[in-house]
Length: 197
Image (tube, rainbow, N blue to C red):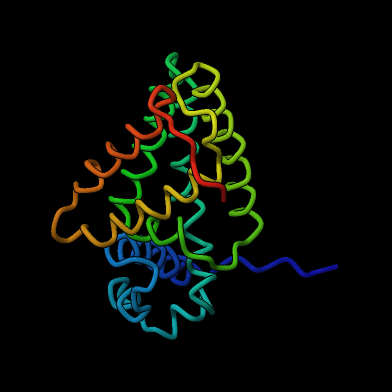
């Protein structure tokens, strides 16, 4: 039987909390590749203290990203609750990309591959089922082109993440204009045959 982990001393718990706050702020501002030394400095602790709590960058990311990705659950719920399936679908897109534009770590996380722990995998898996329902509702209403699927949304997220990344310092709202072009191309009434994958 595995021994239960001992609770942290109060000073260690405070340091861990400071590191989590500093990591969330730093990653949001600078992306997932932000230097860990900057996070430790921002938290007012040594880099050794950071590594004592989070031995790898992945461990630190796994401690903060699930909570940040939980915002996607609220976006999905709002889209599903919208009585207009097309408006719900567009709201989903706008919600996802607003999050990505506001938080560079989420922009990176949506497109970069890194090892996910079980909690993160489950969060993404559950959200994916909701996204499929949002897409199917919009298609069933005759508003979203019939050949659009989740894989197309993944590609759109990847493309928009690049727009967000490249314009965030010079034209932070440029992604909204780009999204409008994409949305116009997703209307069922203007759909043209697509090349095969």
